[in-house]
Image 1 (cartoon, one colour):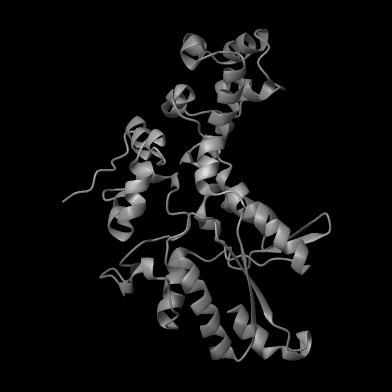
Image 2 (cartoon, helix red, strand yellow):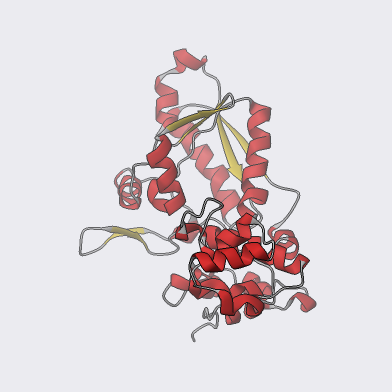
Length: 313
């Protein structure tokens, strides 16, 4: 859509190339980098414009992030809260089992942890109470995930920041342009809240950011791709219209970060990891190997979270 706009308003930009940035996180499907280049060529030909494609990639890989920071499990928000507590507990040789009996007693729980000199952030994560004694359950660890505090592996929400946001920030300074993102408010609760708070355009510290598709739904995107016959990446398969009138991919629903476990516990079988065994069997074998064998240790992690990973014959 923006390429069409760019072609219609050449007088405003002097026929300059349209800058396109692709963040290769090292966690992409193998076919994605090639598709990005082919899609840019398609847009150039269709609208008779030039594309200035920048492929940014962190020097740190997903393997490094998992090794040094932790696994992305449950959700970005829960992983962040779990990590906050785990870091402090590790420094003070504590386990959740040591304090489990003091949980769920309201303000009494918060005051007890304060008496132990727990930082305010850890008190909030465990009790739901802020420094001002305001109850804020949305920033405390849900009961069902507290067992992850004692998990035998690290947990983190840092993969997106390290592999995507940092490289994008650096390239943004290089090209000296404000970015336009295709993110949707319905992608996550955090994006929804951000869009409802700031709208399409935000400006902070002299920098701008635009999310003009924020109000679109996933169905809007699928219908647009279908109706205008836009090329899609191979992992998506094809777009079909179901009996209920809705559109759907025959393959993957998302192509970003193929090894991310955020939300994987909510998927029906075959889940994204099980499907990976068919799409990229060598990658599947690699991630299932233990860390000692040179793999990513997903078997242990998924067993701990009771997420299926065995492939159905």
